[in-house]
Image (cartoon, rainbow, N blue to C red; front, side, top):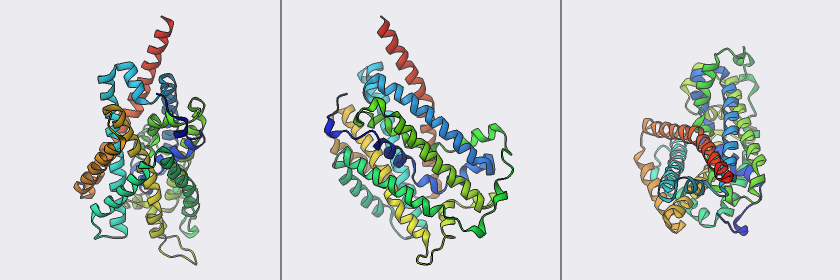
Length: 362
């Protein structure tokens, strides 16, 4: 699908798009989830998961280059307008579910750690209004937020990995490879939700200038995100015992309580407040992808699609009240992501390329 050049962004910005969409609230507490199967070896599982994501991104590029457009174009070319639009709609629904889960998880963190009496709809409404303003500015504005979020990530984690040495126990992670490969794979499976976000590539590809040669920036982005997740898991295991990890929902916030500077107290408050820009960048990208997808599928104006999904997000966030409901919603989103992007997209890419090559030889 043709895209006006003035709407496109430079290829190197894809690095910031990928990292900003991947590194979110999941990094604050995924250590507890991955440690269930592989214990202190779970940081190795993060690397395995990162390698799998690299492979999925490679399949995505093969598909998008062959289709010369986004995932909606690819579906229509292979399945036709009606069936193709139905498959594309499933992916748009996933983007929306991911947005809602990220938004609700962040609000829950704010409610638990900072403002226990804060109503869910109040913060959700404020964030969604801000997102509407950002997305209405166009794709380049959304990428600008992602760029700022990427710079912020580097600065934030420079502080977050400043560990209190008296609490560090190097023997925690020894011996290496104390678990079976099956356990490592099960642990890697648990990182699906944390690693999510890179799938926005399926919608942003036409907006990348010289997109066919931009894969290296996407792969660099995945590598950087994997490095952050690995360091986050590894440093958490150095500080907390396995029993502590299993009983602390947001281990990185708990560790932030141990960090003190002569000029700064309650670093966890700074961490949670600062994470808002990370949440905004993830939501801006995913809601932009959803609204644009609905625009292309149903021929709506994008602003109307954006209003609709913002209202749906607000309602669903209000319905998710308990920790069990929020966690179940995130798990449901994770399962969809697993089958949709780790199974369906590679298979669809292979079928699409085989079909294209067969038509070319006829």
